[in-house]
Structure formats: structure tokens, C-alpha cells
Length: 145
Image (cartoon, rainbow, N blue to C red; front, side, top):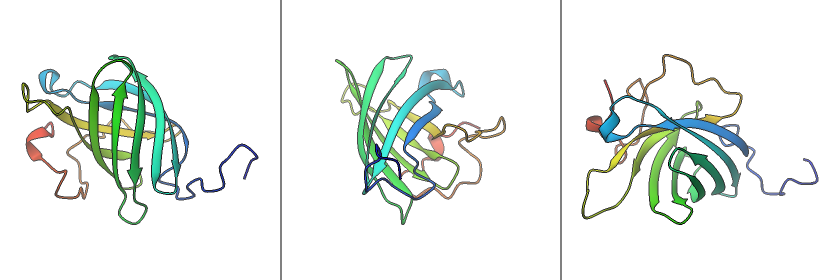
């Protein structure tokens, strides 16, 4: 362990601290992938970080479970809105659903996939392939076909 790494940094290979990349889907753009870049830290069941995408810069605070692979976090855009994420890490990154809670637009949600830098997402990956997502986040209506 390097001198700059916290003693409780996660050792599970599914949750490496460092640079992550990925995309999210938006309801009004169908299967179009919107890219995102993140720097995440995983330690003791807590995840935190920062990143940017076309909406702007954001910070992340949340939690993860090594035993189940389940992850939950809030992405807070600097000076703007929050986005709630629920996902599952099956070993090829984290897949799941994002949602912006709103009384005005209750269906403002979609799918996402993020992965550690150096892991290839592949050109054939999609949010509908054989993933054993927990039933509380699986919503076939949100998965592009």
C-alpha cells in the first residue's frame, strides 16, 4: 500500500479507487449514450468522488456492499440538482438506474453503466444483456432494446 492510500481502501477488485468512465441514458434521447468521467474512492463501504459530464461538474457521496455488489449514491451537480443512483457491480462495472426525484417530472430516470479506467466496456455491451440485477432496481421499461 502506498503512503497516500488510506488504510481502509477497498481491496475488492470490483471497487478500485481511481478513474472511472461510463455513460448514462436519458428518456428523451433513447439509446444515445451520454459520456461521464469520474474519480471515485471506495473504502469501508463508503464511496465518494467527483466528475463531469455534459451537464457539468459534480460530487458523489454514497455506499456500496462487497457481499451483494449493490451500490447507491447521490450525484450533486455543483450549484444545481441532485441525481440518485442505484446499481449493481457484477464484475464489469456498475450497472443500474438513475433518477431525479421531482413532482413535476416523475419519470425523469434512465439506465447507466460506469467502469474503472482500463476495463473495456466493449462495443456490444448494453443495458439489456444478461445481468442479474436486483429486482428493486430492475425496470424493463427503462432498458433500451
